[in-house]
Each structure stands twice: as C-alpha cells, then as structure tokens.
Length: 291
Image (cartoon, rainbow, N blue to C red; front, side, top):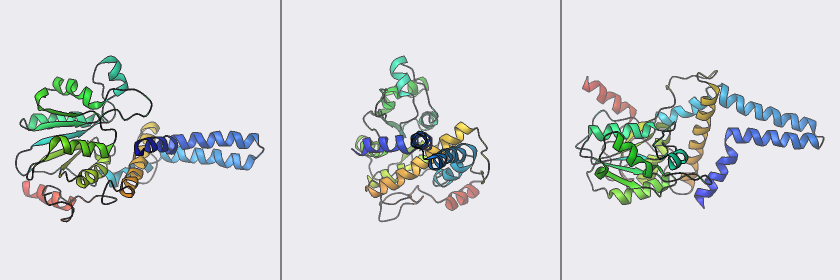
C-alpha cells in the first residue's frame, strides 16, 4: 500500500503535475465565470514552473542532500561487497530491446563497475526491480548482469535482488542477501541526493554501510539567482529534490528511518559498528594528512 500511495501522491504533487492541475482548474473556473480565481490559478502554475525551471531553487534544495555524505579517502580493511541501488537503467527500453540503456542515474552502475575492478575480491549486490506503477519494464537487477559483464565484472561475483521497488525494500532485501558479518566493509553506491535516505534505511535494518555517493546533479557552488542550467534540467533537479525531501519525511513518519536527516557519523546507540562514517570536517582533516 505504501508503494502505491507514494507513486500516486508524487504523480500529483510534482511541480510539473501541480502546474497542469492548476491550469486545468483555471479552465474550469473560467467556464464557471470565476475569472479572478482562474487568473490566480494560471499565475500559480506559471510561478511554479518559473521557480522550478528558471531559478537555482532545485540546486539549492539539492545541496544539503548531496553534501551530507562524502566518499572516505581511505577504507579500513578489504572491501567485502558493493551494494548498488537500482534506478539507473531504462527498464522499459531494456525489456524490449535486450540491451542495457542507462538513464540520468546511470552513474550508479558505472561507479559500481569501477569499484568492482578496484576491489576484485568484493561481491557486487544489485538491488532494484520494476518501480513503475503502470508501465512494464525490466528490473535493474535483471539488466545489470549484461551491463556489468560488458564492463568486466564476472557473473559469479553478483548478488541480485530483482524484487525491491523502493529504498526500504532495497535495504531489507540487500541485508538478507548480503548477510553482513561484524567487521565487514560494504560500500553503498547511489545518487548523492538519495544517499541520506538510503543510509537511514540501511542503518534502520542494522546494515552498516560505507556511503559512496555518485551521480551528483549540482556543482555545490550555485547561489540564489537565475538557473545555471537549461530549464528542463533545472525542473528535473527541483522535482528530484522535492521528492527526496518528502521521502525523508515520509520514511521518518512511517518508522523506516530513525532520524529525519541521517548524520554522517552514526550515533553509538544506533549501531555498534560504523567506523567508516566520517563528518565533512574529519574527511577534510584526513585528506590533509594524506597530502
């Protein structure tokens, strides 16, 4: 039920959808003779699209999410496994054409393949099935073996979960498949803006992971003002950021995470073993020491 409700809610609540709803409402109001109210609805629709597509609103909403976790400069001990969350493959296209077409989040799989080559003894766990509510598609975990094999990752290294439809199910199924032991190091690869929610869910499942963010959508240097990207990309960033913030709130309210915005370092009472989660200040200090 949560999965269905979340999909229906976002289908109506995204900035583009809200604009269309307001424009449709304006037509009805105009037909009913409520001209001023109709004009207000049109103005609201334009304001939403203008803010989302022509300003840096999306980037500014992204910054706290993308900056929350950073890759550690060093890892303590060998890497046991690499968990990559689905969402980076075009399931509808791949189901029909049998390839491995990437979408805008495809960096997740590129980074996972690079890590797999860097850590040849690590298992690679791909979790992600079909997340669309109506459209049919091939789950990322079904497509991933073709892509990763083409990138030089042997099939016998893979652990595959093609059933997960959202981040919570990713964490539950990944924990079951990996069955991590104390002291093991598992890297978590997902989009930087999605990392806070992903880490929060994995922690709630008792799966200590090392965040390895990728797929950055901003430079981190954007300021308040006109968009520094094209309007469509800015609209996408705004939509992604709003959805992620709503997801953080929803996951906290439903008990899927312990905190609204997980901290870089896990609290001692949240887990017994999370030695790799560093604050930004600690990461910078380590980077200085390595120079």
